[in-house]
Length: 289
Image (tube, rainbow, N blue to C red):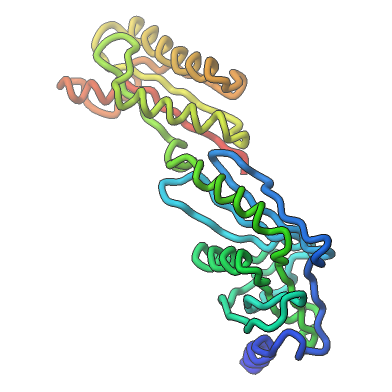
């Protein structure tokens, strides 16, 4: 308990008040920000921290705008470590008071992460010319303090590009299309209107996300008609979905189809509405971790 009190007390001191402190922050003449990912499925803003690692802001396609921050360290913490995140005035812009942002906990062998609300606060402070800075005790020497800062030099132009990327993110994400069920009109290979929109949405996502390595397409029918005919109908439906994706630029080697005919029904085949549920194609997507 006394160690935690000592840590918080030390971190509350002004930056220059701690004599034995290792500082990591880019100098004004070599501060580098870059838009490392700029697609409708992910926006990624990165900043190099010399001799330490890099700072990363990430937002991904989703129904709601999201954001998280990762402090990507070359050397991961070797012990659970408490840290304080402050917004301070950079050395080349003295005079402004420091503002506390949040307390976080570095987990052993993991990068430091900051959640959505505080990540936005960090971006706002950088835009103001401030320097978000992490303070913590070295996990090998608790008597030595470490300060890791994000320089606001050369930030605004790349931040504007990041915000432009955010405005073009798809309004749905991987979780929304990873398991998609398409349904068909009675007889033939015509998708319902809702399923046509779903298929287009899956295709659009796949066109941008290069981490998807496999698309599994399983086709089924109801039990109306003979089994051999239903098997051919299922094959036709699976191939039509695959052909649609290939025509939209999805590599054919990433797509695997299976036709099951009237096997594995999800509803009875006694009523029209029930049979409609069995006339389906299920699309499952596997993504590299």
